[in-house]
Length: 169
Image (tube, rainbow, N blue to C red; front, side, top):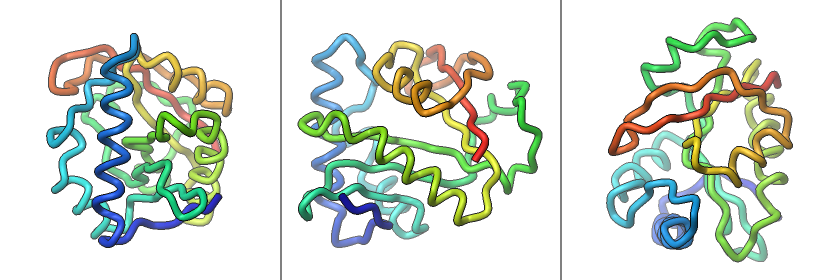
């Protein structure tokens, strides 16, 4: 498996990946609220690629995972008592992390690669938010050593409870 920064040539395949994940989650008990052409939108994905913050996981040249690593956090992050006190420039935020439904089991590897990328960027901590109903993701994050730091009401298209996690890099 290979992890790399996404290129504009990857756009359509990344959209197909997010669509496959959206469809699979919509049909499960763990609906994360992602919808085709709405979230994540094509424009959002293009912007992430241009900013070089979107990373992909490939297996035999097929894109099976995607994630965004940047410093953009929801305003509610300011309401959380983070155990690790760092400047915002030292805290990388994980967004839109997903693995194709046919490749479950690759998430742990991809998440560990995210931590390595963050370490190379001299980040001290990784933070993320996840819907309280997304139990598979919560289990993955906790298995990889992320610690729950709080719960906040967040706007994911509708107001929902999100769990906020943190891990020292």
